Length: 66
Ligand SMILES: [Zn+2]
Image (cartoon, rainbow, N blue to C red; front, side, top):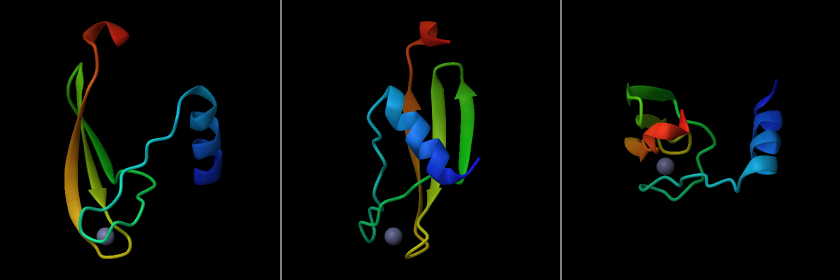
């Protein structure tokens, strides 16, 4: 499966909200690492391929979604 297939598949079920680099504004396609710290919390670690800036975004889900 290619990244193109992943993006196509995910866009069929929900709108794709890709983050942009806070440093240069380039669109980021996939997190470098997804850290599941809690059943309802995921920390995504992003690294910009354009400028190399790295940052973390936390995502919270409803606990009953799992
Ligand atoms: Zn960047």
